[in-house]
Length: 316
Image (cartoon, rainbow, N blue to C red):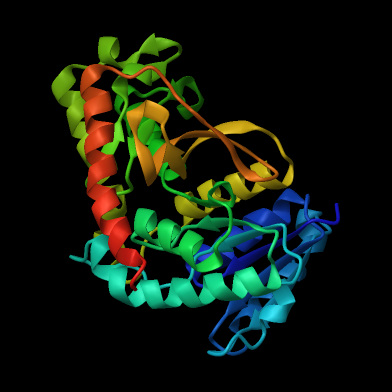
């Protein structure tokens, strides 16, 4: 114990992430911050009152933050900071439509994180994900291994769920992998996807696999269209919380995340969805997996697509 984790942004995504982190009962404190006065304090009060029922001791602390960094002293000394701040998508919006508005928010948050939690590992979940991860690293000036983004865990979870439903098998029997970026240039890796150890490609025809891949790629938009207000948060928060847990426990778990790639797969100088070993310092190493030629080509294509946009975020 003695560990401290902060979740910035107390919307559905942030508050659900804070709940999951508290219920793990591995942190001494979970701090939840928001710019809406009283909201994080109210949620913290409510979450703390669930402790006797759920049987965890982690203390949840709420803090309202102001436009000039007021309130950020609450995050002081955090080991991990999860940044969920920013606007969610509305129906018909792409993740990229959020770039301008969320860049301002994420930059301000990142600067305050650098000031009050200079040793933290930062997990970014704000959209557009790959660009906001790059921006958070620029704004904090943290070593690149200490800033990572949540995308592949969620995309792989969606892919796994769709495969399990299609084949009517338990989700635990399915393993899938998605790399690349979060969005249009997501690269599913059917060659590394299995059901009870059997290759997915032997169990489903190519057109059905492609159909599930497309549904995975559009997984967030499908939820947004149904909800009409707000976007997905149960599956995304589960993914972000697991990443924070791997950091806090220094577990060395290998997860698909948005990480800085420097030479792996012949790709350099870009934040990209890859598998990485996660521990106390963030990304311990990027794990290269054997890809087919077409999967590798897709990954390189994704790298170039996000590279162009990440170059622009330095000025936002």
